[in-house]
Structures are given as C-alpha cells and as structure tokens.
Length: 102
Image (cartoon, rainbow, N blue to C red; front, side, top):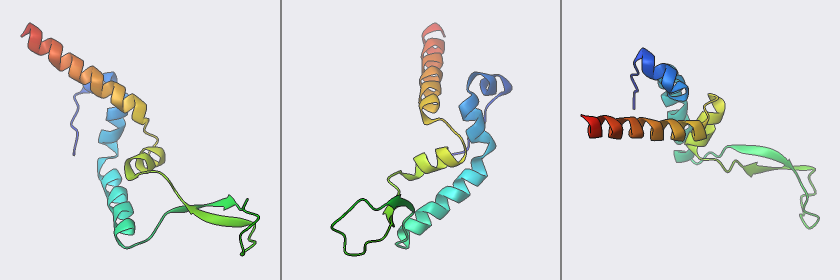
C-alpha cells in the first residue's frame, strides 16, 4: 500500500515517512523474498555447529533465518516496527479525537 503523507504528517510520523520514501523499493524486495519462498529457496545464516552428534562434523552449518518478510524488510530499510506501531496508534488516536470533536 502506498502511503501519501502531508508535510506535517511526515514530521509527526517519521517512520511512516521512511516507508513512503522507500515504497517501490520495499515492494520490489518484498516481492523477491516472496518469490524465493514460493520457489523453495530459503534464506539462511551460517552458525557455529555445536552438535557433537552430527555426522557431518562441519565447523559451521546453515540454519534458516527465522524472520518473516516484514521483519527482514524493516531491518534492511532501517525501519523500526515498534515505532511504526506507536505511530499507527497515534494516527488512530488523532482520528478518534477529530471525530469526537467534529
């Protein structure tokens, strides 16, 4: 979803302003990550092999990354998901207040 913020909203909601600025890039990277998954590919990290019973006896093993796509995108684009949630709540509070007073 494309977010269009006013200048004032960009100042009030800086994490959402980041999302707005990276919109197309974020969508493209997210689509690629989803495609990888659909094709059976897995994103993985190297970890020290701490298993003394493994027959491979490798020093390191690949383990799947245990993050979902939104978490990976947030990390890559330096977006704080906790701040995003707080800003969403602030937006909702602002809308509720405007509706109550309007």
